[in-house]
Amino acid sequence: MTWVYLLLAIGAEVIGTLSLKASDGLSKLPYVGLTAVGYTVSFYFLAIVLRSFPVGLAYAVWSGAGVAVVTIAGALLFGDRIDTAGFVGISMIVCGVLVINLFSSSVPH
Image (tube, rainbow, N blue to C red; front, side):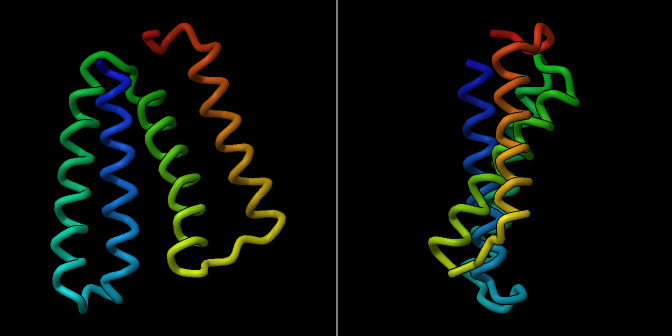
């Protein structure tokens, strides 16, 4: 169940971050509210995850997956562009998250 909570934390963080972008400098109130709710829900589920995951590994997965998803969503929703170096860097983050999940004995499976 911890992995489900981690996925919920990542999803809520992505919603919060994308809403922050859509808020146009916190000037569009509905998006400001969605930003606050997204981050609150994300931290709630991340706190639950930290009961059973080491903090460093949980944070690495949470932030790494969030960066990758936000990058893709930003390109699709806002027309954000990513260059080759950015793509390589994001790919390395995704690979790091996969290595942690597949091979680390510190993460409960």
